[in-house]
Image 1 (cartoon, helix red, strand yellow):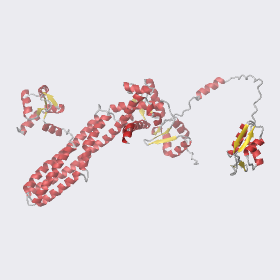
Image 2: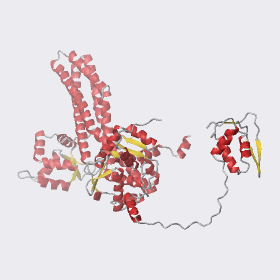
Image 3: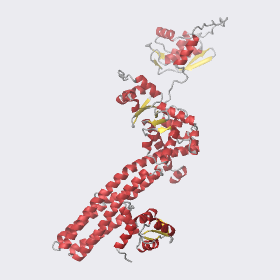
Image 4: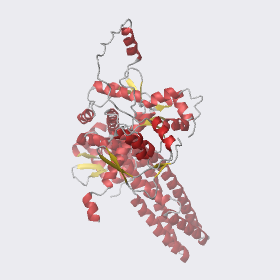
Amino acid sequence: MTLLNLEGKHHLPELFDKLRSGRHLSADDGPLFLALRIDYLTYRTLFEALGFDLIAHERGFYYFRSTDELGKEATQLAVFFFVLVEAWGDAGKDLAATVFDPAGHSVSDLPHLGRDSWRRCMAEAGADNVDDLTKVLQRMDRLGFTERVGNERFRFRPPAWRFLDLCLEVLADSERKQDAPGIGEEESAC
Amino acid sequence: MAVAPQTFFRFIADNTELVMVIYERGTVDEAELQALIARHRTEGQPASEHIRRQIEELGVVERAAHADAALELSQPVVELLSWLTRRQRLSSATILRAYLDDIGSTGRDLGDAVRRGDSSAAALALRELDGNIEKVRVLSEGNRESVVSEAQNLRSASDLSSVDRFATVRRLWERHLQPLRQLVSVHGEMEQLLDRLQGTLDDGERRFLAHGALQQGFIRTAARLSRMRRTAAEDHHAAVSEIAPLYEQLRRDSRWLLGASKALAQIRTAGTDPLTIDQRLGLTGWRTRHLMSDEKLRARFASLVGYEAIPPEPIGSSPPPPDMPLITQDSLRGALGDSVPIEDVLAFILARWPTHPLTAHLRAFGLVTGGTFGPVQVPHDTQLQHYPMERGHIEAWPIKLREVTT
């Protein structure tokens, strides 16, 4: 068994507390992020021994990956983001630049309830009114995906790249399904 | 009928705005043309009817092929204006290829003429080559301008989705830039063709040393060829530099958009479950739910200050505890330790605690066979044994314990 040197790991309790609550830590989190960045392998080994999977994303942030189900929460966040991507993409905006616009986005400009098809998707995820959208944003804040900029605005933090990754995953799945021959086709190929 | 260039250009100069409006619109009908002439006619200019007649006579406009009532600028005028306004249309690789094939074929004719020493044929071939080399250069420049201008339009287009913009860029990339890359690449087809032509021109320059004008012709064509090769490579490089970042950005954006749209479409038809978002995101949600906060605990303690507990009612006479005799681990260890080696552990346990229930015997036997007190053995020559019980019997293989080690 390897004994880890935990001397000087002053941020350990706070790091553990935040990561286990689902928060994604990025450069905006200052010392906590730095602690992970400097000593990632030690923390990873330590948390692994405790049953937590510390992930370092290539875009420069850290989080615990879990296999537990979180109920509707993750779905609401993802659908919220899918709608934004569709709205901004349809408007021909540069997506990465728009998502991570440092000036942020106005809550009142959110498109989610503006089109029937989006409203239906949000309802499917259990968030189909302004109050629900506000709660989704609060969850985004808590998990480190967004940050409030003043009263009525928010901006996406680097961990929101996970939702863009998710878009690509869904597309890749769909392309795989299209490429895969159907059962009948397989049989006839044989 | 030929048109005097002076007359043509004077008309264009006097009616530039009118011509540019038609250029922008593409086609106009008779009534629109009359109205445009009237709107753009300035004082001192001939009557509208005169301008209307001249514009067709000079070949500035002609009847559109698709409808007699429609008029459009004639192709040479369109090309001239496109060149002037740097809005050349993209030429496909096929057009360029046709010119290059011509250059190749004329180059071969030139080679024959050089070998035969036929100065007339050589002069003729040089003239053709000059024209085609210049056309390739102009087309290449035009393509560069078009690509740059298309890229700028795409960057500023606000009415096109990322997917549509990517489709346009992909078309530019695949239909115009990729084939051109093959032509201008080192060791590519164009490179080889033009290398051969360069060699022929060098031979011709030496062969016709005594023919001053013709020798100069070879030198001029060689210079044109060098310039065309240089600018074609530069144009291609510039066009690629303009489009490549846009292509990458739009490819990435369109994939994000397609992914999000596919996810939303799936949600609309089959709900959120098939997407397994929870699994994919793997968010951790380990929170201390249902625990009291510090404030609540403090309030609770405050409410308990001064609380005096009411003593519980005394428990009346209760039935005696059930008789559950156990063989404890310590007593078993002691008994085994005193009796090792033991040939048959189960027989020993049954004999040592005869009044205990079967469950106690089996638990003790389980501890021994599980190695709690040391290694046990099953003798090779042993037989299945029957152990009589109060109601029936147990069958087991005898287990031997040599010593108690733990």
